[in-house]
Length: 386
Ligand SMILES: NC(=O)c1ccc[n+]([C@@H]2O[C@H](COP(=O)([O-])OP(=O)(O)OC[C@H]3O[C@@H](n4cnc5c(N)ncnc54)[C@H](O)[C@@H]3O)[C@@H](O)[C@H]2O)c1
Ligand SMILES: [Zn+2]
Image 1 (cartoon, protein in one colour):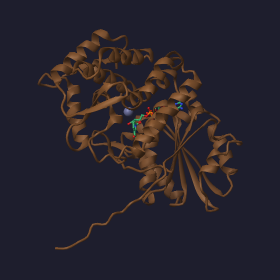
Image 2 (image 1 turned 30 degrees about the horizontal axis):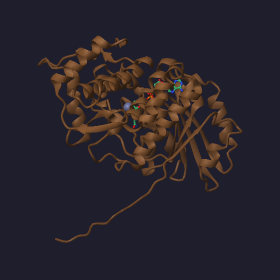
Image 3 (image 1 turned 135 degrees about the vertical axis):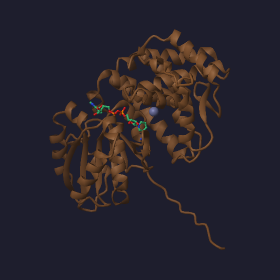
Image 4 (image 1 turned 120 degrees about the vertical axis):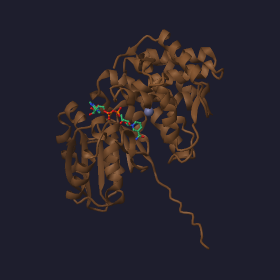
């Protein structure tokens, strides 16, 4: 037997931009960002929730596209977004059909404007049609701008599993246009800040202290404070992906998934009535208390973290904690095994040693987790009843 191993190396730019009113005629950011061969086609997919919140958007975008020198506009498509569009392959199939009919090729651009769910579906369509078309994301929710939109993943749910079908694909660019955030209902806009708190806790103590100091303005959704939070969080997430050594998640360690093992399970247990952001708030609270009760994190730091979550009006306990499997264990604990399965190797959960400093552990003590959940129930200010 003989053979040879080759080393195929690629390097991909991950372009992250921040702006306001990207489609106003005097904003040249998009024109400057996209390279054209003189006649590149461009097709824009819009999440219907965003189109509804900004009734002039469709007209504005078509007007902008027509004025883009060197581009051949294939117009705009509006589809229903939200978790609904990821639940089956219908939206994906419709997107493939539209891409094929529009004659989109590998030198074309697909632009997608929407929440994290819709970006995931159109991102998968773009990554698979012609084996990959240049994809420009415009995340429109706080959560998508401060976290998922700057990631390199896409996917849809299948076989009852979240993101079972998907790819890793670095988008051509991500444009965080802060103007879109104003369309999102305030409660959801505020809840999405949780991913910024999460990344601060695992990566950047100074950022956490800044959030703490600016918590009142953040809770009030003061635009400049919110924008600075989103920007710092997006850059921390992108920096971890680019320089953290594992952009395509082949290893077990996932610091950006702090608090997520229980969050994913709670979303599933509630049939996604509990949003990702709300679930992450509760998951971060649980793993913070567990970090404290296992002696890793000091009590005052744990209390500061819980206080920030509560000031941001996030719940720290949820009724799904009371759901049990037939053998009497808490259903949320099944999330640990599912998280391990998702990682594909050894269970690895990040806990906090300090604010801004994590530590990977490979087992969780369910007796102690039960105590933490009971403690959180007594401590909670806000609970969500769905
Ligand atoms: N790919 C990844 O790495 C990754 C990471 C984390 C989360 N996600 C996914 O992101 C999804 C959650 O995303 P989300 O929190 O952005 O919410 P979402 O995409 O589910 O959107 C929620 C609702 O808000 C609407 N909407 C979006 N932007 C709006 C705006 N500006 N104004 C008014 N309405 C608007 C949508 O139409 C939808 O009805 C989940 O499916 C989750 O799995 C993906
Ligand atoms: Zn998340």
